[in-house]
Image 1 (cartoon, rainbow, N blue to C red):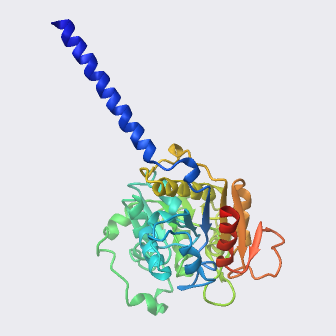
Image 2 (spheres, one colour):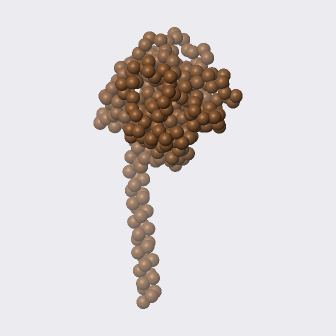
Image 3 (cartoon, rainbow, N blue to C red):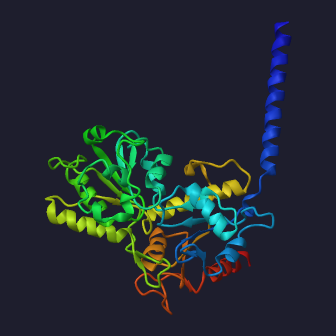
Length: 379
C-alpha cells in the first residue's frame, strides 16, 4: 500500500514537473527572439533639439513619430536625456505628449535631477532644502524624501534672511507664512539642514545664494556659528542652454560658479559639492539602462527595475544633442556603444564640426538625425 502511494506521488510530481516545463516552454516560445529586438537605442536632448521653449523645432514630432508603429506603440526605444527639470518625470512626460502629439512614458524622461532618487534612502527623514523653478520640493517628495522644504518655504521661516525681499514685488504677493502646511518656525530653527539640492534653475539668485551660504557655512543652522558643511548637490552643471532668446541663457553651472566663488572668498574651506547631469558618464550609463528597460517592455516581458537583471545589449546608442560641451562630450566620454550626433538648432550653430568636442555626425535638425539613424540601422 505504501509502495503504491509512493509511486502515485512520484508520478504526480513528474506530471507537475512536466506541466511546468511545458508552460515554461510555451512562455519562451511566445517571446520575440533576440534577433527581433531593437539592436539600437536613441537619447534625445530636449531644449534646442526637440523644443525651443514650448514649440517643437527641427521637425521633431514627425521625426519621433517614425519610432512608433502604426498602432502607436513604441517600436524603437528612445529616451529624453535632458539636464533640465523642475517637475516630476510623470508631469514632464504628460507635457511632452501634448506638445509632440505622442504617447511619452515617464520612464522615457531622464532629467538632470532623476539620479537624486538614488539618494532618498540616505536622507529619507533628514531635513533637506530643494532649490529651483517649478516644483522642486514635490520632485524630491516623489523620490521618497520625507522631510523636504522648498527654498521659498524655508526662507520664509527666517525674518530678515533676505534683506532685499521688500523690493521683490513678485514674491510678496504669494509669500506664505512658515506655519502654513509646514513645521513651525521653532521646529525649523532647531533642525539642521542635512543637504541642499539644486533641483532646477534658481529663480532668485540673490536670495538663494544668500540662504545657501547661511546653510552651508553654519552646518545647516542659519544664524549660528560656523559648522561642518552639509551636503550640496546640483542636478547639472550647464553653463548655458538654448531657450527662446536667440543667444544662450546662463544655466545652473553659472549659478554654481557664483555660489562657489562667494563661498570660497569668505569661508576658510572650499565649497564641497556633487554635480550630476550631462556630461557625467554615469548619466549616460543610466540612460542606457533605461533604454534596456524599454526593450523589455517592448518585447512583452515584465519590466525589470534592476538593470543588472537585463541581458539585452545595444550595438549602438545614439546621443542627439545641440551642446558640444555637454551632449557630445558626455557621449564621447561614455564610450562604446555611444554614437554622437550634433544638431544646429540650439547652442551649436557652426557650419563645420565643433573643434573642442567633435561629434561623430553633424546635421541641421533632429529630423535629419532620425533619418540617418533609421537608414543606417534598418537598411
